Image 1 (spheres, one colour):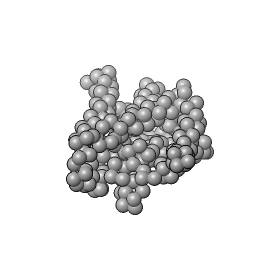
Image 2 (spheres, one colour):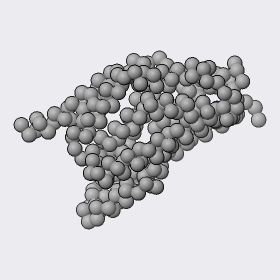
Image 3 (spheres, rainbow, N blue to C red):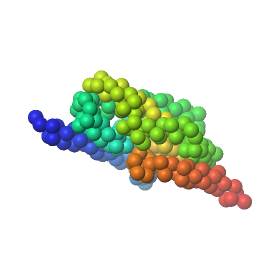
Image 4 (tube, rainbow, N blue to C red):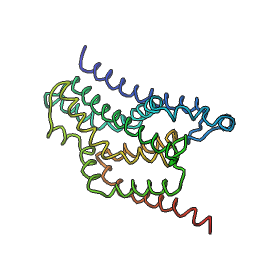
Length: 263
């Protein structure tokens, strides 16, 4: 098999996994009776009135189904952000000793880190649910929680930690040259490292699911789009702080809304 067909198979498989992940999430949302913004449709709402644990309830109170949802969500949202990284690795296949096996290793290592994050945020969601901070749909039960999350994530956009983590995600070639490992195993090690920096860069956008609902396809799509923009070499560094400002302003608006309405 020549290099060109193998490259095509690799990229088609990559994008096929992303497509399947989005289809799975869409079918899961529809099966739970939710609309595109993660709210119950008329039929699901009637079922919940009869039995609060029906439809949307059960998957959101059990670790296994909830972890599976988050793991697939990580594939749907984070794999698209890997395109610049995988393309940078391919450039080294022409000028260095990078291999297609190493390419798959980078992809696997990166995804393993995000699966680990999926387990962590699953536990966080269950803790928030049983403490009453969020409801069965993963939506904050108080404007103080929702507004606080928006402000915290927005403020993180201005921190040194965000700058460092984003620097790795924004310039994957620099990371490869400084941490180069050969072969499939080497690719996994580099993927694990890059995945850790990526979690450090993007964790906040995952937590914002608790503002709008973790099963909101609209939130998932917008968060994915912005994280992809953050990693584009030409404009990535220009969108971080403006988005931070937007998030902080949104959080202040959420906090002020009850006061305005009450006044």
